[in-house]
Length: 264
Image 1 (tube, rainbow, N blue to C red):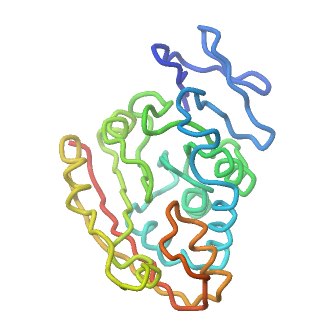
Image 2 (tube, rainbow, N blue to C red):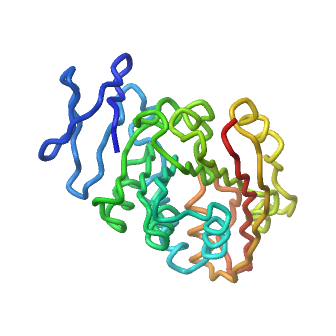
């Protein structure tokens, strides 16, 4: 896979050497001990530690390990129908659960990008980089550090929505899967109102309409009986906690809208 230099105005091909990658202009980036490559530019950080925190990553990992997200994973796998010949990018990969699990099942070439160093480090430790899997820290909102038409599948699972960059790195015969939190997702935790969240489907279809055609749309919903500590993990794993009172054992709904696109 050809990686590109993320420095503005550069975009040259990166070469690997020992514990770093570098471009012909002399821009150099470290390969971490766990194997991921950090291409994030200092000026692209809106905070000192952007993206998921260590605590959020750990909480989400515990939820995955409990099997809470298993039904969502199975529906995503069925929707994209990836095979061993596919080359898959997960933009906003987080701790790597979805991409890493799918890659183990279908044995395809997998590439994950996220702005959070703790998340990508966790991904690299759980799903070690090698010949068919690679993890990158980068700002996918600005630039995906890959050559044009590198991927047969691009995933955005409750993550980034950079339509222009997705189209650039996706092959003409490729497919894009966008997963959105559905209105019923975590409804039990929405303060005391129990009101559904926003339906983001129409707006998302509009976002991708210039470069993509919607070919499939489905919703996957499951419920899990969680003890108080697991409910607390749900609250820790989201950016804006939606429940102020202490966590208590309850049944929680998990729901995603899956939108499958083809390039125009």
